[in-house]
Image 1: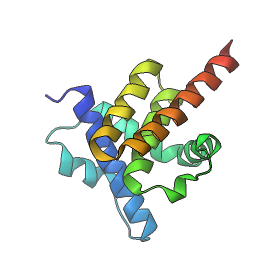
Image 2 (image 1 turned 180 degrees about the vertical axis):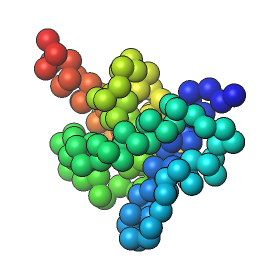
Image 3 (image 1 turned 90 degrees about the vertical axis):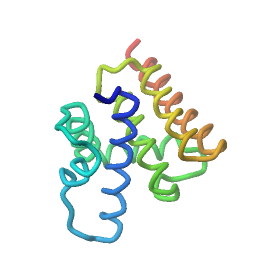
Image 4 (image 1 turned 60 degrees about the vertical axis):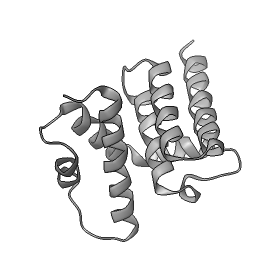
Length: 136
């Protein structure tokens, strides 16, 4: 059984594939991408992938608000997938904010360079503090 961090890495890879297929306008079924990565069904993976896809416009809009001098569309697909996962977990789930941010930062340390990791951390931190301010 995979732990949550490993499952998040799978989610990131699936979302990456979705973004590649959407860019090239090729038909796809994200269930196939998930099956390529996992031997058994996993609700956490499926629910998260579906949530990111369903809320993609809002996630991108939020990312663009906090990307200083950048837009989501300028980032490579891996970084887009990591930010999307982080924002989704931060805004749309009950996962503790610190966990959502740390997991996204750890993924970016593995798949991106240091500048991108800092940028992802800054975006998620900005959204977190904005959400906190709005809640209080």
